[in-house]
Length: 378
Image 1 (cartoon, rainbow, N blue to C red):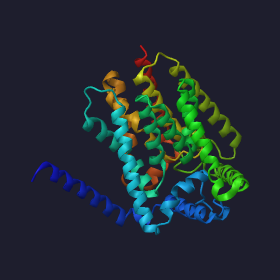
Image 2 (image 1 turned 90 degrees about the vertical axis):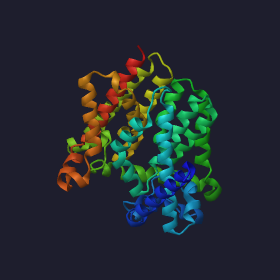
Image 3 (image 1 turned 120 degrees about the horizontal axis):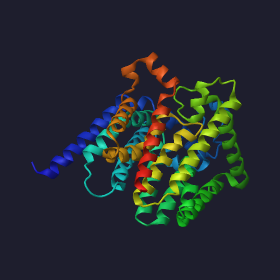
Image 4 (image 1 turned 180 degrees about the vertical axis):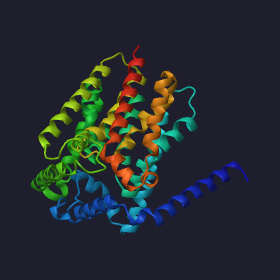
């Protein structure tokens, strides 16, 4: 049997295993995808996307995303889920591909970099598949943008960043950064893409109808967001302070969260002003990707899959840290990866999440990346 045939058989076996996972576990879930599936059908029919009677499962994406997902919504729900499931797997593959490719050339072993990173973040990727979320799509688009910037193709990078922003506005965090770094073509192209995508649903709903949609989108987010601060899976700074303070002290939660965000932002500006090169810019982008679930009021734990690039960078540069800090970082990785519901049990896992330990874990990751960035400016 030749090597090519072995590779084909291995690939087919992997696809079959993933299909079995879908058939017996995932297909019965994917509740977040069902929300988008319904929104896609509503877009096709010209119906209102944001309806309060949807309760907890309200559509919270920009109107353009419903148009983007509408071709999949034509399919029966089972096949639409199956297609989106395999698309998520493709996005995950490219997240690891781009993260690995962005690392400096030289002595890098994919087994040492990709396999540990996958184990550390496996539960977040698993949750992404189980819910049928769009975070892998978002991170894939952002990493594609970063990749094309390194290839000096800023117009293409701007297209990817603009599309990422209309999938989820989280990507807006990169706009001031690229403006600060004088990546003007990236900033301008991505801004034009966002404006175009905000206007484009007018083709289906008319100009006034689209304006009304955007208002309803904003209203839906503002109405539901504060109620979810204290959710067990909310790992944002807003969620962190809501768990450590009383939910009745909402003003104090906002103040503490915004002050912390301001501190992190100032810290980021401080390191971004340091002498820069290709690697330092990569570290800065990896920090911004981890800021996404921390800064967003609706930062769910599985959004930490955005840390793939940052964790791979730390593993790649592990030797640069003194022994104590090296082993402390490894311990932090183990806590992130090994704290599973199935291992800990309901009570212990619930306590772990209620204490927002994951938020602390990733703040530690950010501190290590900041140290790495400062080392890189020496």
